Image: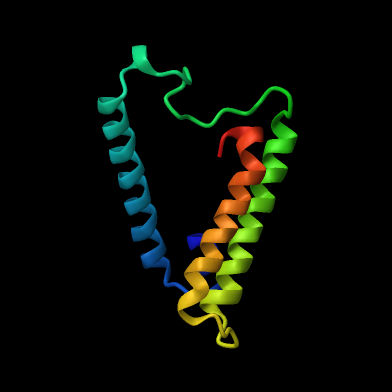
Length: 113
């Protein structure tokens, strides 16, 4: 979503870079905390919460699902939070949250996302 905002000109490129660095640092810190809380011996998933493509679906389905979920999220962000014609106001975050939820419902059985 950040890169879609940068490409569209809604967000300056340097802010996009700062957001990318922050996301990478945050995810690394989160993975480290998870690793400290759950030892490999106690991990029931066998992959410590990593996303793995379900062999029943395959790479093509995972890529299409991820593309669809990303499109859905970007569209909702642009239509509710960015567009000047939007009447969503403070409810934009609720619409964005539902879009993320819907994408997860679609993708959880496919790639664990």
